[in-house]
Length: 81
Image (cartoon, rainbow, N blue to C red; front, side, top):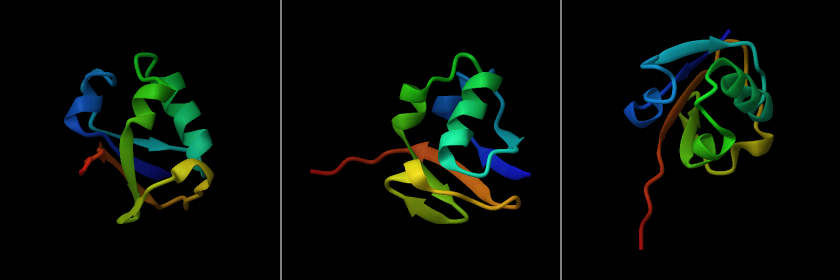
């Protein structure tokens, strides 16, 4: 199963859970699975985060797929200007 790691700001929506394994194989299914498992976690909240899949930062993950052994790490988006 793919492994998902949550940053501190998302952990308040996951009851302090830092890491979970998921059966999802694409980003859309991942979001749906996480929202089912953690009702306080919403699509909007997830959408405010950046994600790295297997160490590569994905700017527009909506259509991304990943492997059974992938590592997914959410982190705060950094804005510049």
